Length: 262
Image 1: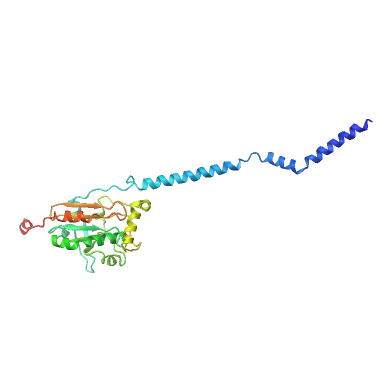
Image 2: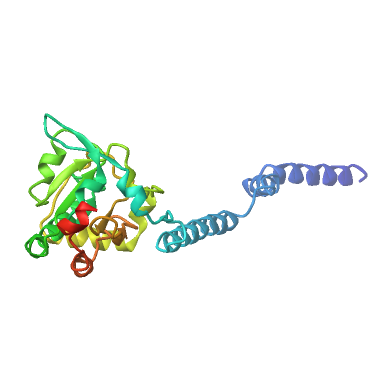
C-alpha cells in the first residue's frame, strides 16, 4: 500500500513533464521570451507621426517659398552707375563703349535679359518689341543686354526682340546687387502661372546658359535726365507692365542741339 502514493506521484511528474512539451506551453514560453519587443501598433503610430511631420515640413516650405521673405533684395541703380558700364557689340569687328551712349541723345528702353534661350524671356522680349512702333514715334530706341554669348543663343533670340543687343560681360546691368533665384523658384505659384502663360502663348526655349541671375528693364532719360523706370525681375517670368514702359518713355526729353553744345 505504501508504493501506490509513490506511483501516483511518479504519474503526476510524468503528466507535468508531458505538459511542458505541449505546443501551447511552447507558444506561451516564446511569447514570454519575446515580451521585450514593442507592440506592432507602436510602429504604425511612429510611421504615421514621421509621415505627418514630413508633410507638415513640406507644406511650410511651400508657404514660405511663396512669400518674398527669402527673395534676394534688390538695390536701385544710379545713373552714374549705369553710365560707366562697359558694353560690347556682337559683330565680328566688335567694339567696347560706355553704356551712356545708348541714351545720351534720345533716352532708351533697355532689357537686361536673364537668359536668351528662356521661353519666359522670349515672351517678355516679344511684348517689348510690340511697343517698338510707339517707341519709334516717341523717338526712344529699344535695346537689350545679355550676360554671355553661348553658341547661337543671341541669334536665336533676335526674332523675338526688335532692337539691338549688346554684351554686358561684367553683368553690371544685373546689379548693383545681383539677385539670384535657385530651385526655390520652382516652388512659387507665380512662376508656374508664368510658365503656363508663356507656354499657352506658343513660346518655347531651352536650358542653355546661365539663368539664375535675375534680369530687369530700364527706361533711361536723355543726358542727365535720369532713370525713369527700373523694373527688377523678382521671379522667373516676372514681366514689366508695357503700359508703364510707354508712360515712362513719354517723359523722355530728347536733347536739343543747344543742350548738346553745352
